[in-house]
Image (cartoon, rainbow, N blue to C red):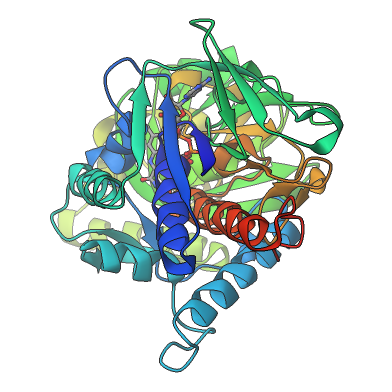
Length: 437
Ligand SMILES: Cc1cc2nc3c(=O)[nH]c(=O)nc-3n(C[C@H](O)[C@H](O)[C@H](O)COP(=O)(O)OP(=O)(O)OC[C@H]3O[C@@H](n4cnc5c(N)ncnc54)[C@H](O)[C@@H]3O)c2cc1C
């Protein structure tokens, strides 16, 4: 009996367990799949927190380009397509269109539905339904789960033979022919893997951004106000990236999905330029403001004050802050010559980035184990056959939209499949399974 040990029962770990158990069954290999989870009570707690409790499970359009280390991810996703197609005989599923992750979830009984920007959510609209099918699937396939087992170190087999030893915080030791490390980003540095595998420094990304104290004086006045606009990240006068969507002002800076996505690229000193009216092209902004002034003047019998001019277009608090930025007094008449200053404030309300605003809100950690040390088709260590690292513990991250969980499921599937194939080959050849693929 070969044991496949999975360290971490989150998204990648649970999917790896299901896939390993399915592959053992499909190949007829003898083996046990064990999930060791640090949480004292349950697996999958991290999944329940995703998508505001709804779990944005994947995206209808997955492209490797959105990921950090896109080349590695691209190879992995292609390998997953191939792996899945061959498992099904290749006749009915088109490798170019099927999403193997969704197919596997469908096998487990989960239905999904699509929302804006291709975001996929469980039909029941609750993250619990994703965890429920994973746990039920793992249970039905004979996966063993041990909670309260916090792994601290994995030792490689001596001279490349024998088992991996997993040392836990409770001083117990587990033994396994293959180990899949799925501890996520927060904990990646806390598990020591055999050399040369070294966890690189981790930093939180995909979160709110803090702005300079001077700019925070303005955002504080808009605390908790959300606007639907666009926001650009500028560096040295050049646009690095632009996102459309909701921007939420906070007392320390800005938040919201658009800001989360820019936080992956932002550096201290960069400028954020908020566009409050993204549907109006910059070159038409002056004309829009003057035409609005003329129309209001015709209707009201007099030119509007600056405050009155923005009423009906922006929330009063937002208008107040923008007028201050544009150097216009709320009670003064909005003159034709004021249009240029106001247009600049409306289309490019500039804030200087200091860093991440609130680390607790960040959805992923950047860093972890460098992808170069792993085979992208399996997530198996090049130096230590039988040792796999998956999910966020690898140096892979992506914007909001279901991409990070898609990576967790995908890498878990690849590693689970490869670990079980290894067991199958080793039992058939009496060897160490290095001819697994
Ligand atoms: C608030 C929030 C919302 C998010 N929403 C989304 C979303 O909607 N869509 C999306 O795509 N992504 C989302 N993400 C990101 C996504 O949750 C992660 O990218 C994904 O969960 C990573 O999967 P993982 O299996 O690598 O790690 P995790 O899911 O974090 O699982 C790691 C598991 O390992 C366990 N563990 C840790 N250390 C040890 C140890 N030493 N020994 C044993 N067990 C250990 C942990 O307890 C945990 O159960 C969100 C993240 C956050 C924080």
